[in-house]
Length: 90
Image (cartoon, rainbow, N blue to C red; front, side, top):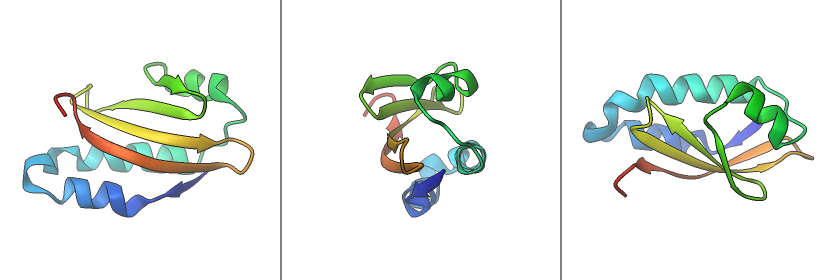
């Protein structure tokens, strides 16, 4: 999968209060980058805790559910768009 935009993830973990998210976000990034998903069911096989909110939008729990990563996925073109990364309380 192609992931747009790694920069959003990097800018998030570079903030002092979220620096503990770096290793978890990097792990998610490299796993997703090397994956191929045809649909949400295939994605759920790898990420059991991922929630499909609406068609194509998925929420990932990062670092033991401390952070939430919201993405849009275009399965046909194999692209993941990072939409939001934040804490549970946001």
